Length: 206
Image 1 (cartoon, rainbow, N blue to C red):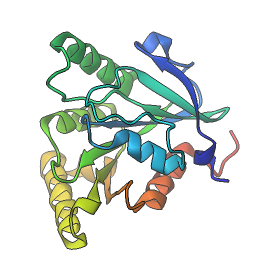
Image 2 (image 1 turned 45 degrees about the vertical axis):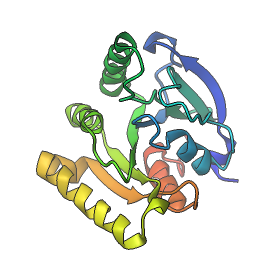
Image 3 (image 1 turned 90 degrees about the vertical axis):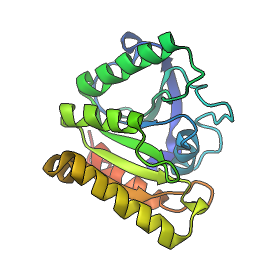
C-alpha cells in the first residue's frame, strides 16, 4: 500500500499556534478557491472524501493536517482569491499563509494547484513570490487538464513555464516544476506522488 493511501485526518488549525509540532516533514497544498485542491488530494491519496470538496468556493477556512506516518504530513491550506469571503478573513489568511510558508521548518515543498483554464492569477503569483522569498520549492499542478485536448494542455504548460522563467529567471529554474493533472481522469497522479516522495523522503526511515 502506498504511504499516501494511509493518509488520515489529524487536526484543523485556525491559526499557526494550533498546528502540530513543527518537526518531521510535510508538504502543503495551496490554490485558488475552486482550483480542484481537495479533489487532487483525494486522488493522490486514493480516498474519496479525505479532503472535503465543495461547490462553494472559499469554504475551507482552516489549515488541515493529514498524517501519513509518525513523521510525515500533508497539509491542506485555505483556498484563496474568492471575492465573497469577507475582506478581514482574506487578510487574516494572507498573513497566516505568508507566515506559514516562510517560518514552518518542517515544510519541504508546496503543491500549487492552478486551474489550467485560468493559469497564474495574481494570487498564484503572490504564493510563488513567497516561495522565492523563503527559498521554498513549488510544484505546480495544472488541474482540470481534461477540459482541454492534450495539445492545448501542453501549450498551456509551456506558456506557464515561460511565464515563470520570465518572472523569476534562475530562481524559477531552481525552485519550480510543473505538470498537467486531472483528478477526474486520474492523469498525473503518479508524477505528483513522485514529487511528494522526493520531498517527504519516503524511501528513508526517519
